[in-house]
Image (tube, rainbow, N blue to C red; front, side):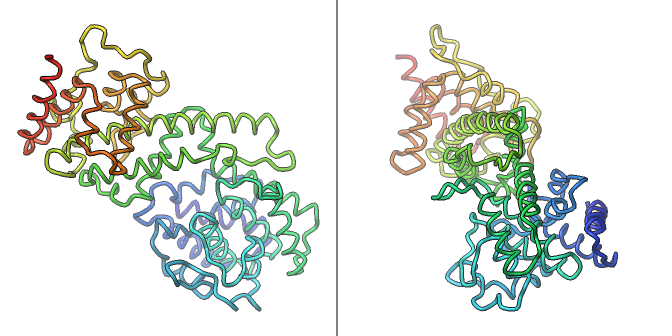
Length: 458
């Protein structure tokens, strides 16, 4: 990645007519790779840079190199090189980051970043409102300002600004790209950049195309591949999941709950953008349709995973409290017979007439049975416990149980009360399986299974 980054940066600078010593190109490329290779990252890594390359456009290639450089809420700080670029322009107070008051006068690079992003000195930088993108742009401007013309840097910063995700029109109906055009025009006027109206419009189109490539995973043809990147994001925002085999059932559930909540609140219309004919109407419709399908399927999938986690969490709570996920489920690489919970689960209740009235959606069933497109460092590729529950309770049963699980998560019902809502045969099978895995809790779990088993016999 370092070699590819150096070549990419050098080629973009040459295409823009910028002369920079190779030693400086090397230093900047290494800075980028260091910042994006910290242990906390699992998706926004140097490899992501090369998902966004357009061989014909040096502006967007520079944006690709710098756009994810800063990721405050994941990295929990800055590398020394990045800190040197940004700390004179920001300050930390009241639990947040603010642009320093009085920092902009005479500082053309900061003034350019503020204008392109529509920010002002003294303003708070919001984690989900462009903070990372603004600071990444500022590092780019500091790094390249001495050699790249300001007009080109403004267009590149505009590409980075458009990657602020999931924004709709403002109260006046202006899209993010409309607003970017206005700010580029303002930057050109106030900083004497000499950008023509034609170049500003072209730059806005570049920015929209670049931002769409940044979220292209939402338009994956296969849902399993879309979920792959979702699973790569989970450890970035949930540090507990980075310790394979040790993370607890509750921490796993909280991670799923956060992602599921995000997707439930996500409006698919805000994922991709179209501006002045880019992309084409047909291409935009295809992207939006796939995004809607993928988001819907991911919500359903996460709901099933959350339901399985709720069952495990409830059994852990009634038998002694929260515990490592691997203690109840088995190790991820456990292949020996009896080494994993699913080895003790029947495929489906054999009782006559027990099949659910409406089975799970075929796509959802396939995702649970066969798994996401690739494996994960912290989770099984398939979902045997979720599949077992879903096959035995059907679509309506899943909806009712998931509602009860949310009540348990909110503290509105006790874990035992949630388990009572599981069909007795399902609850007994999971309890017996957990008893075989979490052997120190065998007595408590088998006592529960015996109690619910009496319900079956009656």
